[in-house]
Amino acid sequence: MSAAAVAARGGLQVLMLDEQPQPGGQIYRSVAENRRKRGYLGQAYASGADLVDALDHPGVTLQSGATVWRLDKGPQVTWSRGGKSQTTSAAHVLLATGAQERPVPFPGWTLPGVMPAGAAQILMKTAGMLPKDAVLAGSGPLLYLIAAQMIDAGSPPQALVETQTSTQMLGASQHLPRALFGLPTLLKGLSLIAKIRKADVPRYTAASGFHATTAESGKVDFSFRAGGRDQGLTCGLLLTHQGVIPGTHITRAAGIAHHWNAAQGAFQPQYDLWGATDQPGLHVAGDGAGIGGAEAAAGELAALNILCRSGRLSSDTRNQRAARARAALFRARAIRPFLDAAYPPPAEILAPTDNTIVCRCEEVSAGAIRQAIREGAQGHRQIKTSLRCGMGPCQGRMCDATLRGLLSEGNANQPISPPRARSPIKPIALGELAALSHPQEEPA
Amino acid sequence: MNVASRFRTLPETGDCVQFTLDGVPATAPAGVTVAAALLAHSGAWTRQTAQGAPRTAYCMMGVCFDCLVEVDGTPNTQACMTLLREGMTVRRQTGLRELNGGQRD
Image 1 (cartoon, rainbow over the protein chains, first blue to last red):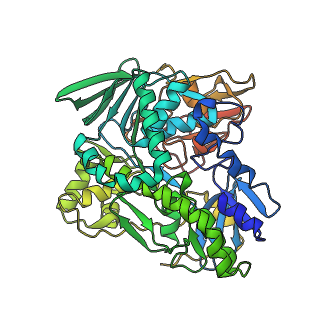
Image 2 (cartoon, chains in turn yellow, cyan):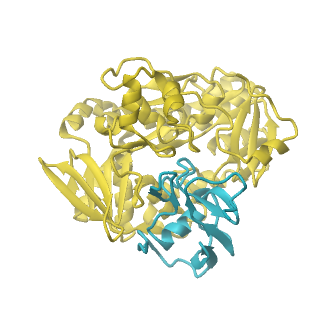
Image 3 (tube, rainbow over the protein chains, first blue to last red):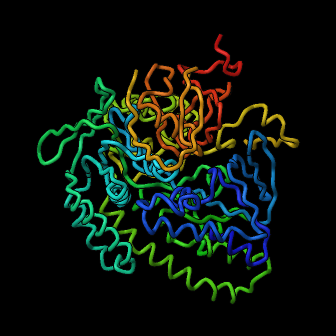
């Protein structure tokens, strides 16, 4: 959003393709229509309305509900809206794909009543629906934010079941001096935890061995280990969270080079100081380029660089105007090493027990995948062809991360290539594909 | 199969939308997605997998495809990416779809 506004103010015509029904991404989802309601979502959320307002510029054409499903050299973008696909060419394409929640697999994570905490937050933002009798389980700052929002909305969680250990927190403290550059974020985190404490929400830490079943009433029976003994909670909703990872299907399908970010435990596209990638005309910004959060401001940098390459800014002006955004980016990133070290996803989530479903679409268990690996399957592709893992409609979005965890089990340092992603990166109807006036051959 | 909704929907405005779920009339606040309407209506499954496992909307952001339902005759529609409209016909899906476009008879 900030990139579109900066580019348009700089004189470029911007076509903004957004898959969601309203602008705001996931962090500021429905922020404009929530201006005078749902105050429990907080100030930081409400401030996103300014970003949406800035899109009100004659240079910006916003297409909401538009799904990009293909990128070709040129660059050329193929997108679908309202059941019709079309192709648009542009000198520069900025990919801001955002993040998705890291899959949190354990026995029972596919049952109705088990959901990512971020999904429940989307329901709060878009529909004013409050989780009833919920347990928040996992780790990471978002868990605290959602707990605080639920408390402010009058629907506090039944309990917080956190997986991080005091050893991890101690290890993370070495990153604290650097994190001080992001002091407001740190203080906000502390105030969230204070709010949870004040609301008397029971907290379990160093929890492990998650397991969920459905009770006769339809509620979720959640069992885990914490404090040296087996624990059980019955809840209406079990809301899980283990951080977020970049959404890289478009960037991988576009042929952009990706690398493994070990600290964040995720693949991310490679790019320069301005977000430009190795593919001509393709740029990246936002959480899709590596997790940095809403304040990371990389969109503005990418837009300034695109204005420069389009001949509308000299490189000197670009560099001068970038100073403020660079400082914001530095502050936003300064806190990440601390957060990444303090709230790492536990090994049993990265590589779950044999009886856990890994691929939700094709119902492939961790046991079946381990068996295939023992029989010699190497890499995502061979597992996919032998077990159909990742071949369902989500195209690996819910299992790629776990599959990597299983492949690297026992040898964390072995190089594993990012899985291939191919267009259409989101399913489209055959009729829609056939109706495209100039269908392109899929390169092998 | 009657499972209470796992969410409390705050009465914010009076605007409501009528739709049917498996032929039974239901109501939801205006402006929400089909997935939100289904979750506000019931805590039960909205889809059964090929192996008969119960599922319902999961990620709410178009990533996981567990919210697939039949909307106005179109099977495999992502309920979380579809805004609910007055008079919509929503059907839960059991097992795999046929290639003939959602006609199960």
